[in-house]
Length: 391
Image (cartoon, rainbow, N blue to C red; front, side, top):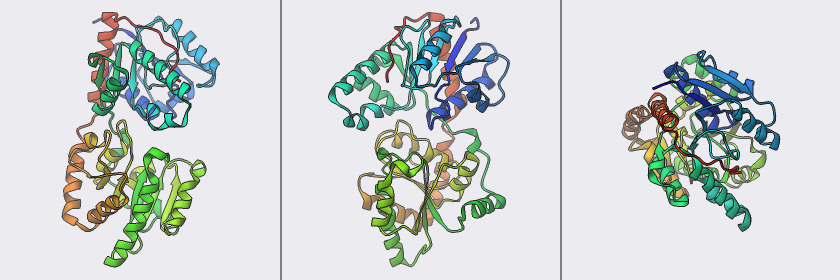
């Protein structure tokens, strides 16, 4: 097939989740494809974060703020001057009206049409739903990050199944650097004063992540362990966003009587996060909704047992390698944590199964499928419809 010119929207690359996806897709394309021409549309600083790329990758700088009207117009204007065969929009956020080429789109979840919409007016929900439907209907191909997300797209928006395909996420390569060394353990002891056994949560701090129930389950676990005379100095470490927008978490900690046993560390870089994953007794992820859910796999690749939810995409992602719980039942979460802490044979089984499960997801496999779809869309000249923004 002749080479094609592909634009990739990297404007959201600094955002949690979507940014991980964009960086890994672009880096893997750089390793796999030296024939097609890639145009990365976004700020030069974001391109630098990706690292070295081969000469068939070029930057198309955008200077206006991403979410502004000027940024919206600048993206469309830049694309109109590039004569691309297609553009990859790696998130369901914004697609400018009347794009000059077909677009493919990655959908990570349908959260905006679930719990968040309850906070908005009925008129806004209806408008947002119709705009999203038009954006999805206009895509030449939709990549869903899990079967769960694919089913949500088809069910909510009546998109034909042959237009949506599952292309899984995978683990960032920086988590694949082996187990923590003595120097790594010394680093978290010195920098974070972590010298005790701990359970770990890593991810966003938002209502659907269910962090409040996790703290309540940890409090109940501490009471249970006191009866067992086990793990008297066990802590819960929470790594994620700034807590300023979530004062209820601090209140929950105080109300549950674990203010000396729960630590909020905020953001930590991946190079440090991998040490916490490696040293944790259990990784806890009782989320109510995930389009994919990478953190359990990130823990598994370090041999850490995982307790996670039995809802949304999580059973699909973790397979038989985690203990699944009803995320709305605090005592079920607590009992799973207690059993996993105390049952050494179970921990050993979970460790081995976790390695196997994490290895099933590969950026190279996923990006090869994306490349195949690029070729199909570019060479078939599939019809497309430029649509207004989804947000």
